[in-house]
Amino acid sequence: MDFQFLVPENVWLPARISQWSNLNFIKTVMDNFDDRLRADFRDYCLGFLVDVPKIQFSAQLIQALACRGIRCDKSHELWFNVQGHLTQFGLQEYAIVTKLHAGSFHEGDRYTKALEKRRLKEKYFKSLEKISCAQLEKAFLRASTPRADRYKLKLALIVEGVITASDNNVSIDEDTLAIVDDLELFFAYP
Image 1 (cartoon, rainbow, N blue to C red):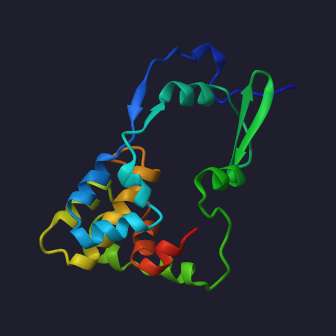
Image 2: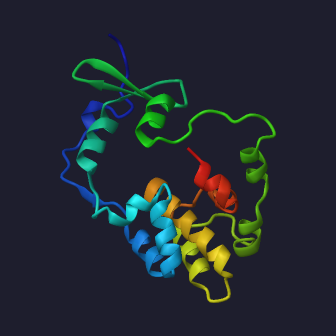
């Protein structure tokens, strides 16, 4: 079977790297919830995160997979050579692992309409081209931020800082701000 690695074998490096998930955002958010919001949050889809101890993942394993990545023209798929067997990881596998929606939405549906609204972005981050998790945290810690918006910004920080973000300085997906601005939609999201 003929294929080309994304990272040439001659530049592979041995690694002994460990990294902790950024669960300090959960603590920051929970410390800033009142008792009622803390209890409500535990009942929602992300509530299980409150009780999760620090999650350790193996950057060594991730590096090994990255080094075995195969060039592929499909933008929503990753292919790996694992002991001579080609293995695919695509949107369907991502949806199974994360239990998140990975398909398209119907035109004009509530999700699409929510994405068109940019109220939180315009109100708190209007002058910023990119928003980091640190800036998101600062916005909800401001005393001038209304309580309802603080709650939404905290939820966005959990999604972006714990579930999807890789670094505190990487910009967040602004769609998250639009989705959390509609709490009913956010908590109904699969």
